[in-house]
Each structure stands twice: as C-alpha cells, then as structure tokens.
Length: 161
Length: 264
Image (cartoon, rainbow over all chains, first blue to last red; front, side):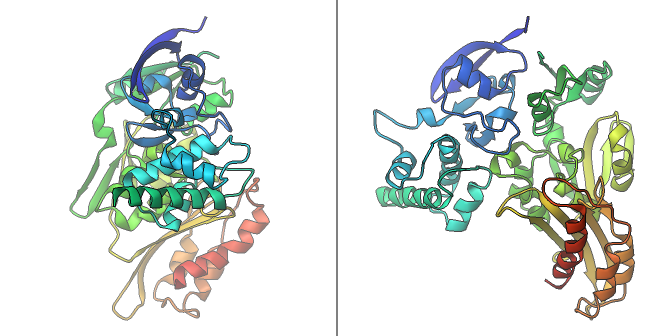
C-alpha cells in the first residue's frame, strides 16, 4: 500500500490539510485530494504549462512539483481568482476576447499571465509573449490570448489611475 | 510505483541514500519528477538536500560560484550575472526557469542542457562531493557519475565577450536545434586573442569546437576573417537525429548560425 503523508498548505488563501500519497505530484494532490481541478494534467513533462500554479507568488508547474515539497507554502490556482462572484480582470479579458476555445490550457495561461502582471503591471507585447512561452494552446492560436493579457493590463492600469 | 521523498540536510547524507541504488537525486524536478511521471521504474526514492548554501550565488574577484540548486530564475535576477543571462533565459518557459537548476542542467540530455553549453564556453569547473574537475571532463563521464554536484565555478567573461545563440523551430521557446556559446576576446585592433567555443546538440553532450577556436586566433571578426573558423566549426561533430531535427539538418545549419553569431 502506498504510504500516505500529511501536508498542510494555504490554497487560495484557505488553510487546508490532507493526506496524500508519498511521491504524489502537487497536480495530483490538488485535483484528487484538495478538490481543485482548475490545474490541468496535459503532458506531465513540464512542456505544456496546463498545470501552472503559483507557489509563494512564483509560477510553478504542478506536474513537476512533489506535493510534499509544498508543505507550509501558499498555493494559488485559477479557481481562487474570482472574488465574490466577480471574475479576475484576466478571466474577464479572456472571456471578452474569446481567448479560450476548448479551455484546457486556459487556467495555465491565466496563471502564467498573472505571474507576469503581478510583477510587470504594464507589460509590452514581447513581455507577454515571453511570459506565455511555456504554455501551449492547440485551439485558438495565441493572438487572442496575448491580446487578452494586454487588455487586462490596461484595465488594471485604468483602475489604478 | 510508489515513490518516496527523503529530505536530508547534507550532501553526504544524500550520498548514503543514493548508495541504496533505488534512489535518484531531486533538484528542481524537471528531470527526476518527469522521469517518474513517465514511468521510470529505476528508482523508488527521491532524495533532496535542504542545505540552503546549495542555492547560493557568490561573485567575488571576477569569479562566479553557482550552487547546484541555483535556479535559472535566480541567475536572471542576479545583477552581476547579466552577461550570461541569455543562456539562462534560453531554458524552458518561466515556470521551468523557476525550478530548473544549474546542477540539473549538467545532466540534461541532448537536446536539453543549453546552459551547460554556456558553462563549457566559460571554462567552468564542477565541484562535486568527490572533488573538483573541469566541465569538459565531467561531461565525458556524466553518464556513469555517481557523486553529487555541489556547485559550478567560472571566471566571469569581460563585458561584451560572451556570445550565445539557441536555435529553435518554435518561437519564442522550443527545444534546441542547436545552441552555440562563445567567449571571444579581441585586442584594440579587433584581432581575436582568445576564443572558447561550445556547441549543443552536436554530440551526445555539449562539446568544444577546438578547430574553430584555433582558426579564429589572430583573425578579425569580419566575413573574410571568420571564414576558416566557419568551415572548421563542423569538424568532428556528431549531431543527433531526434524529433526536433535530423543530424543532416543540424550539420547544415551549424555553420550558418555560427557565422551569424561571430558577425552579429
């Protein structure tokens, strides 16, 4: 029988604790134990970016991160972005800009974009392209996604102004 | 297969775990966890070292020492490593760079490991728990290396002397068709006084282009001046065929990109 190990994390601002299989990835723990299915399992090789989450404010691939390594750390996923029924500006921009088709890559795209905007609120187009370079989409192509991120950045700056 | 994680404080403790024969060292996870995800049954334990000094960058006296756990992101953030930043930025996307380590890159098989191509051009030495060795020597034996890497060390290149190119089919990021790193010093007249050139994807490991280095000595970085080196750069290469490119293609485009790097 697979050994179980306890882990305690802050998931989208909420203290959570679960027993997970020893050696389980964070992706598996989030989806199977913590009930957060927003990170997607695509390639499991660190290539597609669909499983992207933030750990302590930095972008990580949950498929390559062992859950045990996350003990005591703060995890953010797309599931935690909307507040009180109001979508995050990135989610709103993706929605309005038709930046999702099948939607499988979208949570990872949004977390990668959030990682960028958290540090670079007014990015250039090249910076957006670079920030999304670890995320693969096989439906829309990337233009609507890039435009959505730039649109969200503009919306944020107008809000600040 | 169940996988267990052991976290230890020191390299000798990790070495003891690895000696069981069923364990693999865990750095950032881009190689070891990926292997586990792909069903690699050769290990059932991952061991990592919690020693924070492994994640430390020291720059003193014109030399840089990068602990094995230093990530590509940390290199990009470091104010004194700006000259080699292009090589760190060539590794994966942002999420990969958050965790991909210098030590892990030493073991990344072709077509990965572009940062090591840069380290080879920089003349890096590798500190292991069994002693220190030149990177060239380390790469020759890495397939049967059973120690643990603690750090790499190299002389920081003089400003403007380090050149790096990674060629991918997918923009802005993709696996390497090839990568080239070079440290080229010139005198006041623009004559090359020192050249150290390394190639990625041109063998089963990053390799030096020693014939091209010799051909550049005393030459000027002009179309005529680099012509002999451009011919020589393909000497002795044995490029790989993989889903990214055939060995024929890699062999054909190497001189083109090498020439651009020299004249750029």
